[in-house]
Image 1 (cartoon, helix red, strand yellow):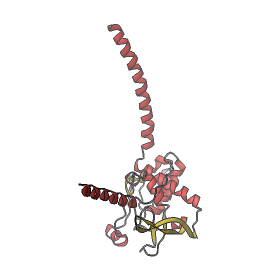
Image 2 (tube, rainbow, N blue to C red; image 1 turned 90 degrees about the horizontal axis):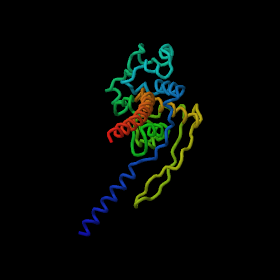
Image 3 (cartoon, rainbow, N blue to C red; image 1 turned 180 degrees about the vertical axis):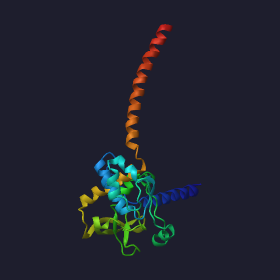
Image 4 (tube, rainbow, N blue to C red; image 1 turned 135 degrees about the vertical axis):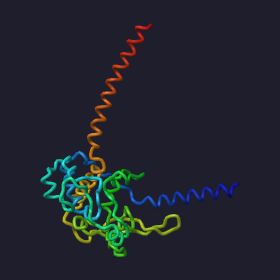
Length: 251
């Protein structure tokens, strides 16, 4: 019996170790910019210029960008690269077969990506904010890039001109009797067009737009929810006093 319990305990410990090793890096907290119209507009510009070339947002229409303060003329002049109609969905013309051949898989649709990537480390926005800031040069990969938040990622660093090129510095340590590589720091190889602070702000704008795109009416929903709760609170007060008056007359 003791041997069985010991075997079960070792199994659980081994499983816990596997889980711990598969968790990856901690996610940074994404700034909440879904109420910042200027930030959302910049995020939309970044999304169309850097993401919409390969990824689609098939459940989002261009004319919905009017909800973040853009006019139809601004959308037509600055953001319509994949279609000629403002009422069209944000689709790409890339052939899925070619995409699979080039990248090893079809790039996922990003309409609700910020809602689908939530995990025990944080929200989907936290993951995206960390992921887009965790690229580094890795010549052993076909794309020349790797990512701390998503090891062996297939997508290259499309924003590298903004961030510049970095390499990751690892240190070899021993854990549970095995040698493991632990990330220590980044070393800048070549500068980007943005400083690290500016790049983080730009990624915050992009992630905020992805959050908003996943549910464009979320801010309205929250505002309506607050008013509904206030109404229920007042109604509860009236109902409580009415109930007291009713039973007072009966007794």
